[in-house]
Every structure is written in structure tokens, then in C-alpha cells.
Image (cartoon, rainbow, N blue to C red; front, side, top):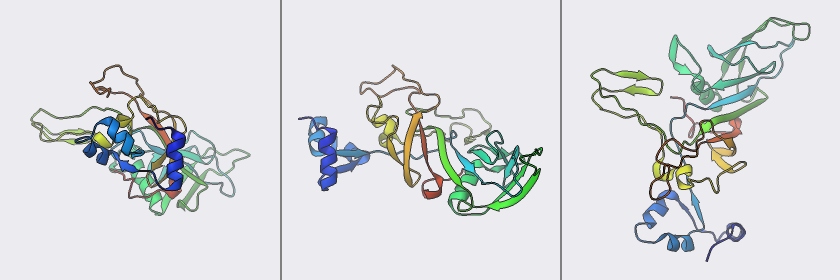
Length: 262
């Protein structure tokens, strides 16, 4: 007999729901049929943890006295967006200083979450309402107004795997590829992947509440490069680049246990 969301939610409230991870359910599938698993299990949790370049954070610094309209902004020497409101920015995970490519936006976000001090320097042309032309100060996640992680694309259902068949090392922005196929660069959680476990997005959608980098988050939209492909295997799993999600959460409540700059 099929279970309804209401029945499952009632069991969760009563503390009687059977909750397993996707990994545990995969083990059950070796001895039980899908119907038998559905009868025994009420909730299946899934997760993904991997490299994702389409990530970043909106920050609102608060106003200085006298105020400044920040048109050029640097955080720890890294140029970030000055194209928002007077004291807002978006830090992209791949923002970097070409002269120091080993430290970038992803590391700034991680340092903020860790409570470290970040040097903020900004410049503006100066106006009657925003007369200040330069500011240099130190910020932390506790001294700024808002810090919101917003990732326009997360949890790719499928993504490319990169290898290198030449005799020379190849340097990519997602890592080093060794010659003669000695390593591979990829990003997926396989059987734990939320979008592979819900290939048609029947339960994951706009407003879905999720666990994001150590705190509560939400799915806000389909992710960039979302593609509903018809190329699937016998289990209905896409076999090429397919669906993605955009996600949001309060960066101030996140943990570096779940978010790292690489």
C-alpha cells in the first residue's frame, strides 16, 4: 500500500518513522525488492559533497560614516563585485588575484565562516550622498549585516569527467591532470546524490528545505545549465549533463566542516 506524505509526517512527529541513508538503502536493495523497501522505510536521506565552481555569497557590510558607494571592492586583496548596491557585494567562489591564484573567493567564504578577520578595502568616485572615496577596514561575519551563501548551480545530476592522455601535465581551474591518464577530475556523490536518487525532481523543487553546509537551507530555483534530458539508462537515471538546483542559506550559521575552499 502506498504511503502518503501526511502519514509519513505523522510518523516523524511521533518518532516512529524509519529513516535510512541512501547508502543504507542501497545495501537493502541487495536482498529486498523496491516494494519491500518502501514498506519498511519511511524516509531516505541523500547528500552530495564535491567541488562546485558555481557557488558564492552575498555580503552586506553596513554603512561607514561618512558613507561610501563601493564601486571597486577587494577582500583580502581579491577583487569582488562592485556592481550591486552601495555596500553590497557578491563573492564568487572562483574570484581570485591572478598574481596569487592559490587564494580566492572560496577561501574568503571559508574564512568568514571560521570567524576570521577579513580586510575590506573599497573605492568610489564620491557623490553628495556618498561623499567618501576610500575605506580600508577589517570585517568578520559578526560585524557585517548579512552573509548569505547563494549557489546558482549545485548538485549536478551528471557532470563531465576530465582525464589527460598526453605526455604533459595539464593545469585546469578545477585541478591538475596528470599525464598518461594517471588521475581523473570529477564531482559526484554517486549513490548518495540527491538528484540521482530523485532523477525527475518529484520531491526536490522550489522551496524544498535542505541541509546546506551545516545549517538549514532552501532550493530557490532550478540551477544554471539545468537540462531535462531524455537520455537515460534502464533505471531512468540521466546519462548526460542534466538537472541542477540553485540553493541558499545563512552563511553565518554554516560550518567549515561542510564547506572548504580548494
